[in-house]
Image 1 (cartoon, helix red, strand yellow):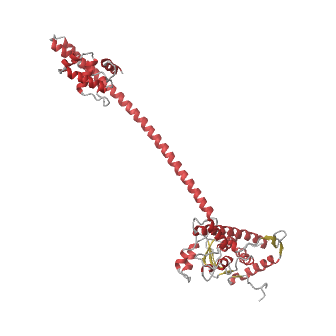
Image 2: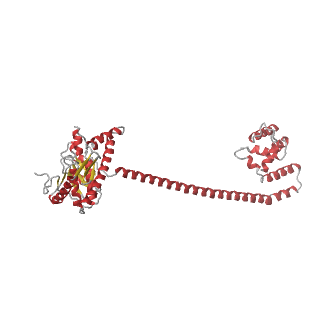
Image 3: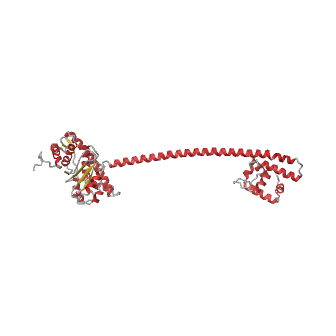
Length: 416
């Protein structure tokens, strides 16, 4: 068989209805790569005037993974694999999109299938893998896009198999990235690819499903019900996402903004609450002030009533010719009535001084200038009792061992 026949499609396997389109693409790409120039002195390789570079396959697959595993050994093999595979997928997806744009322009094609057709052929000529598209594929320019295909001779699977180790996960991440990038550019819809079976892990094929992100899991689930591999295997398949790191960073940034907004809202609420509390405190102070004023008015009214309704009768009683004993009692009664208006009693009975009723009586008489003997006679107690009360009064007023006259101090309290 002539490998360069213009009528035989031998770089890619496709359903019959795509045959002619892909054959045209094969002839174009073959022509493209037939015009080559290598100039080691200038370090350049060109095909049809377009510069290319050669990269060892293993360095972009297993060796890259090994390097990442070494760099992130403190985080474990799984995280190292995730980081390396995400990086390789993003690079390959970007390259696939860029190569697709370049070939669309060169081939002057606009139909999505015609745009797709050069991708698998270019894939084969650049050494990534060959491609086999299955008849169940339905590539459409909408969210129903479905492509199931194999990559025989995948450079990634071969690199892992050459190492002689069987892995427990699919390894053809760059193949998935490149093909999804090319198809995404061809059909104008977001596409992701999942490798559902991989020869590097002992499967029969390196098989992929490509679909819109919203449909990929459903397609994998449908496939798993008919596959020869146990259903549980497909539940663990990782679905690569183009620039997943950027999305996660954006989500983190948005979450940070959301938290800042929550903090600001709570700060504003606290400010409003504090303002309401301050307003409530002001209102409370106003109410307390009003109550104090009302209390003062009531007190003043009470004293006025006493002076108007009681004091005149005491005055009349004094004019009736009292004996000496009666006159003494009346004088004391008038003095006590006058002292009702004095703040001294309230101060002496406050919780801070805590004078007893008897001590208050003694203190009032001392303030009025009575000596101990007179106080004892008025209160009908012994002189020693009065002396003891005076000592306790001085102690509670903080005057003990101080050269301060009790009579003078009590007068000062009344004047405050």
